[in-house]
Length: 426
Image 1 (cartoon, rainbow, N blue to C red):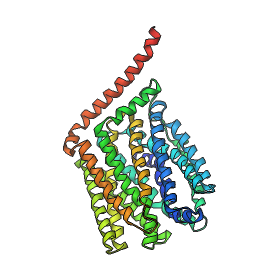
Image 2: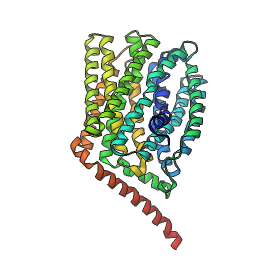
Image 3: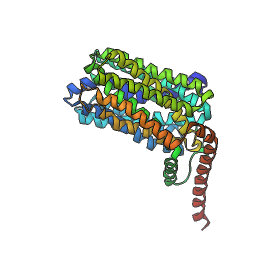
Image 4: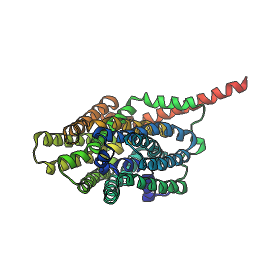
């Protein structure tokens, strides 16, 4: 595996499908609304379908990668992404587009879940949190440039051209992964036994209260950002009068907030630890959400206050994303694919439910979006504190939890081996 920035760029490219699937076509939502004669909520369901596909795809492909290695499901997912992107470009109505977006999400899930699994194969502890923070620099490029690319494409073609470009990018990544991404899970480290053992590993992960605390903190925090992603194109363009190009610039500015937050978090990880930084990030998101809610409800300052408030929210999530992922993933080094699948499916599954709610008030009402941006981080920090416990206690328990998780995985493998030997002895 290449070292340093080359490694980050390679894994970051694999995990960039989420931003690309979601962000590149955001400037086109009003055009899809008009050209396909669909309501705002129906158009936002195409985003929901993609998120559901990403969530379900991770639940399928993550455990598969624990059993058969990282490369086969990665390459199959990339191929499905290319074909479904072309189908989206040819969709005759909103119903077909929604269905093809579901398949597109399923294919894109491969890059997201397997990228996290590869990172866990190679790193642990504070190094894992730092790598996830650095990885956000690579994946953050997607939100910065994807809306700009989408706006540029819309300047000379329709929304269908956006999906053609996505298909072309998928082809490039498919060949890059085939050529450059090695297998990081040796055969000796893969899960063995019956398919039911894979299900058992998922159940083990889901029963872990502390793991779920981190997963919910990450998923609810990410849902707050997706409320912004789903509703911002309508709110900023229809309510505050931004053009498609202006919206792309504001979106890029807020994406830089995410990148900066992640890099600051990475530098502080060794000093304060991932658990404290996760709490700090959620509190920052709540502060930004409260400011945004006050500005919109009070009708004060307008766009000049809305943009900084959104930036604070995204900056806070730059702490939440990498630290919650690191705290969750390090608990299951022998089941990285299953842990990454649960983490990712919760993230995108929650976001799928939240996305249509951001447009519940129609195309000219900002209140649903800003309410969600405030409420969801509050729910995230409550979940984190009630399930995962105070930061001090969790910092002390990390090593013991990792040892216990390894023992659970080893016992599951041993049980499968014994079960397989019994018929042979008879």
